[in-house]
Image (tube, rainbow, N blue to C red; front, side, top):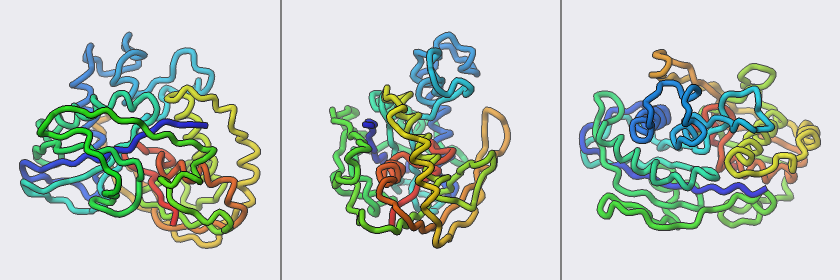
Length: 329
């Protein structure tokens, strides 16, 4: 299965004092959604489900993502997985003075890559509207293509192999070739790092709150098969709705059955609670999830393509806010 994706680094320059929460995923995603609707919504409807343009609208596709009317899967759901992941900066800093820079990541998946100009224009417009407490203004300074997703670097992202494809000076977007997440060869791709595939130990560090539902409940007592179930679901649905791939290529039952043989040998997960304000529902919503480290032991090798894919695509609910980000240690 081959899933097209591309990771970008957006650099913002504060023009006024910016007052932001320690976890900035909600602010970035919420601000983007509101500004995006202003930019592209033709009929200014409040509910996309009743809009005649919903299956042809850029906003509806990217932000509401309705399943096509002829879909053969997910027929009971009103929304398909969003084709983007916003990765807020790892730093907990909350105050930025004029001249300070903030960097965050954006991963676009499948057909959403074609809509990168909309993301750039929207985040540029959002800077004029303002974000955070008191609506501080910023300037979108650069957008860089980052194919490696290596750890480290400014804001938690690598500086290696970055190519500037947009800057505030030129206001033009350079052409680029998207990356491809090939599940069959992901482990041999140097962009994804080097792994000891003979090891039967897998250490994962969940960096942002991860919301995994099992048996109709959010779980803290993560088991390996729960993680694999979520990864299989996310990868197959993203592939189906955004890359025109057939999920029947994946042996769900066989993979999950084998995943139950992999056991937890060390558990260092803890619950992290945070809230976000939903303008649509005019209420604060709890978005807690687990963070921390966990160690699995067993026959890990068959699952590594999905584990590595999850490093790019995240896992669980709320991925468009940057939730569900983990690293292989």
